[in-house]
Length: 294
Ligand SMILES: Nc1ncnc2c1ncn2[C@@H]1O[C@H](COP(=O)(O)OP(=O)(O)OP(=O)(O)O)[C@@H](O)[C@H]1O
Ligand SMILES: [Mg+2]
Image (cartoon, rainbow, N blue to C red; front, side, top):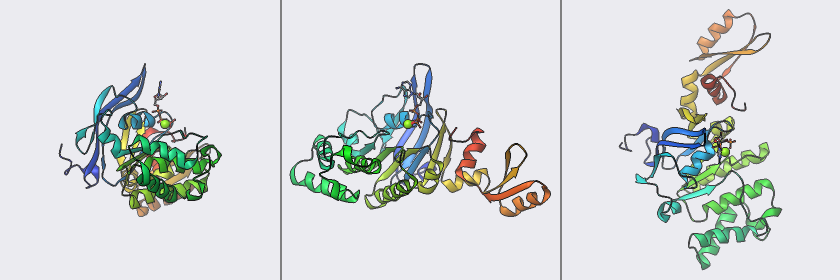
């Protein structure tokens, strides 16, 4: 398929193409024949509840796990994890911080740089740059284990950026962070996307994270992709306005393409009703019948 005509790359050159990717663990189907594309420079969110298949997908995209079926292409070239050229293209931030807690922030980066063949002054300058960029310039001599949770997360990201990857994969970048640190992390990820010219592929189970951050969102549930598009497109497909209709036992939702239609319906109701704009949470609820936290 021609990348140029692929709508799914949002009109950008296609960077990652995934076709029919599948993986099971014994009887558990973790990822079930998923197909999607990511365009160069996109900030792309893979959204789904616990156990949906997000980590399994990212592990297959980054060569940590072998797919049972399907293929991954970078710039049109079939991904072979044994070839270093593609490995150099990507930076990976795993779901759980895997720093060496005894080593300093700078030493953690140094080891990573050496693995990528970086040496001497070039490596030192790059370490300084990445630590500064992550606001960790004054922590270079601090053992990683003594940094706060948010700082450790940023250090893992700084390490992933060290070899100047074109694509940064982040598995649940904000899990465990308080709401303030989470918002700071969002700003950091936007800066990576814009200032480091990096395509960002992140997984999350926080709906507001996908909504606030992503150019495009893919929703995965029970190993399958159930919807995809910009947050605006997804909300529009559900209906841009929603009525929360309060019954004795629950809240019922009704969706409308525009506000006048929702208001018209509201006037017919004699129960307690609230009108509001649709969120991605509503989209997920409408598609699956459940909330994402479930
Ligand atoms: N190594 C494994 N062995 C057996 N089952 C696994 C393994 N890894 C994942 N699974 C199963 O595959 C499914 C998808 O898991 P995965 O970790 O990809 O989900 P996730 O979307 O990343 O979830 P979370 O939000 O909790 O991180 C789950 O049912 C999980 O139990
Ligand atoms: Mg996961």
